[in-house]
Amino acid sequence: MTRNAAALNALIGAPGLSVMPGCYDAAGARLVADAGFKIGFVSGSSLAGARLARPDIDVLSFLEMADAVDMCSTAAPEVLWMADGDTGYGNEINVQRTVRAIAKAGACAVLIEDKAYPRSLGHQGGKAVVGRAAAKRRCAAAAEACRDAGILLLARTDAISSLGSGEALARISDFAEAGADMVYLDSPATLDDIRDSVRAAGGKPAISVHFQAAKHALPTHAELEDAGVKLVIHPADLFAVGTQAMRLALTALRDGTELPSLGSDADRSRTIRRAEFLADDARWSSLGDK
Image (tube, rainbow, N blue to C red; front, side):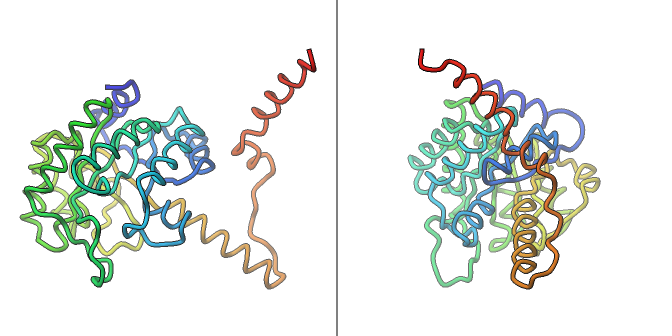
């Protein structure tokens, strides 16, 4: 296990609930680090929105995700990064390729889910999943690649929406047995569903995702901690806030009204590491033409 993976493993094994913000680019990664977070999530939904202006419905390639992981881990190497690996983008061999590429790009953990890939069209973005045996096999392939790469696996099931809580909880148990380091029940209808997923994990850390405007249950952090959840991911908050701020600024420019607060130049300079750049500039330019 890599040093960063071991650090994340120790964090989720410690008492209490940890909060993991999501981002999708280098600037966001620096802001996550500057805010004092030790962990961060490279979010597929935010990346699809920011890079393609599309919903997170199988539009990203694994190369785009690996590139985003590389940008975030390079800009903020002090942060322990988990990457959204989606379905692994194909069969078990593709899943393992995805895991290895994401690990090479700098992630210490990866999320792999049991949704069908490629997603069939005509279902308004509905969450179709692969069969239970195929889901367990995908998880086992991801777990094997994660062990080889020295990173952690978060296995996610989306089965509750189409197949019910019983099937979803059975998959949580399967994933824990197949070698997942963490498990996640997507779209729980109630807090009790989350509690059930913690029990189904059989001692493996259970993770929750907090997605604003989602149709599923959104318990508070205190409620999640009481339920036994070890980590809550906020994948899209920075994207949502950022796009709303840009919309407000563009509206003000169009209408000739006062712009919203832009922050200080010092704030922006810290985010883009201007002082670090200028120090390098001075160091290299001082050598002259010798």
